[in-house]
Image 1: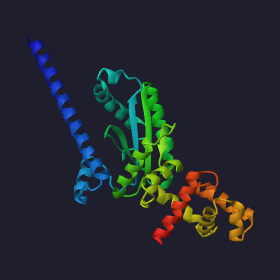
Image 2 (image 1 turned 45 degrees about the horizontal axis):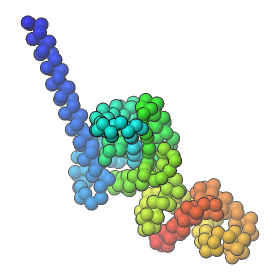
Image 3 (image 1 turned 90 degrees about the vertical axis):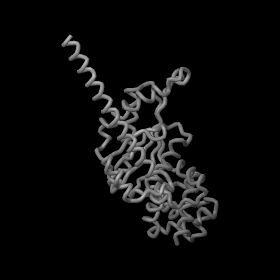
Image 4 (image 1 turned 180 degrees about the horizontal axis):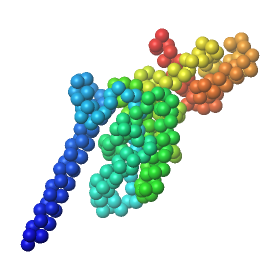
Length: 294
């Protein structure tokens, strides 16, 4: 009887300990959700002090630049939906997936990960623009790991721009959401892909000059603007329906000189307006942005 009583006591203590652990786990996730909601939701009116308090509670550093990465995870088979097991799948998989993310070399102690609005959301810390450009390849390694461990899982990813301050997290999140849902055969879709960026700006009706990806693109464009008289060159090229011969004549330069400038635009900025419609659209938006800021 004594052994049975001790066994019951031990099992009860383990059960209570597990319940306390789960309660702490749920509380931590809830606090993370509140923090992320305050960062990504427009018009929340959260004060700086409130934001700092929430960040401290989950050990989140507000001073670090970050990129928002969203993972859409769904089972490949329809049995889950047919037999109403989707919620059970989600509950069991979420913690497991988060553990995979946390154990990966990709994940840093300063990163924040949680399931937010049904998607796995990672606020990846990136110290500089060079690190931000590596995010796509690092995300690819995470996708491969998830597909290896969970072969029955469909994975789609959307990546936003680098936000250098907390108030820009909302923009990076909106970009990541758009990229995630953009029709594409690729598993990983990033806002810095020019076809996605052009579509995003189309949806914004060109009015969103605060778009982080657009600002970064314009910054690269400006580095060669004065040296190669790029702004006037592109303006004339667009005005003449991308006709190189006519544009060179209008600018009073040799055709090869114009081709050299366009090669520099491709090399440094990555834009080829004469070959891709979306690139021509982005060039037009950059010029409009320059006029707006001027």
